[in-house]
Image 1: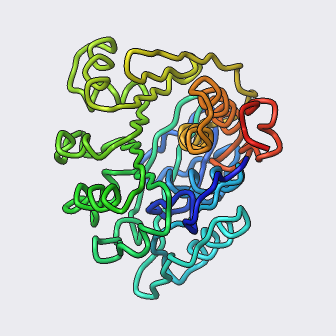
Image 2: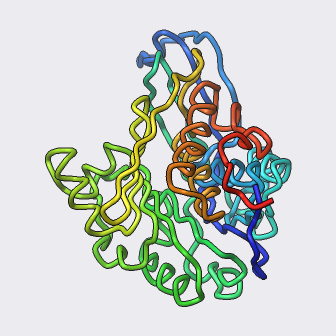
Length: 318
């Protein structure tokens, strides 16, 4: 994909929820307490974190991506930085802190469902003092993900959005899941600074506080100039003004765990949007990215590259 004409150093900057994923798989992964040992069929240890997965997908699609974050001076931290570097993400803003441990999420995967246990470690240690105007101004777009896990940023997250807009950036938000299930943190004050809102169906319901999907969409359409809702195997829908765009999706390959599919979807959509593609094309690219990852194990296997998207981007400038 093309990057468009821009004097900025980066197309996208993102705050990294830096952690690794330990994925345990079996038909029954429910642990038995009482010191009962139980075997599982398989495991994988890979870079995790919604924003980190997003960053790798965006870079693979040809965007210039920088990530701000913090990791421990341990093997897991090295794994994260090396993985981001290999994908083409600029990691100069990731700090290695010897006093911290890198975060980890344990995924218990059985069938098409999973449960997650997270130790935050360095994941949530970013504060507003880490987010300089100079760094923000170096990018065209700020993607804010994992809102509720970035607890160090939460007291000032709306101020960060306002600064980004003042500096000329466009802004997208994917809150991801709220572990405390509060679904608030002054979202009403944040909406005026958000250009693209990217929830899934379940998150849309909670963010709106409505009891039906239809009511939730009607509510969020009033708040976000561009609302994009991920619908799993039903594809995705985008609303902009009075226009609605729907995109179906082919079924993912069997054996995948779905980890990171929504994050790669976000990256695919924004890759098209930042290149000023029609929304229908943005959705097609996004769904293909999500489908590819949903068919793999972990959030990186199956992420498509720029060359894989050529058939879905006919409007890109040559």
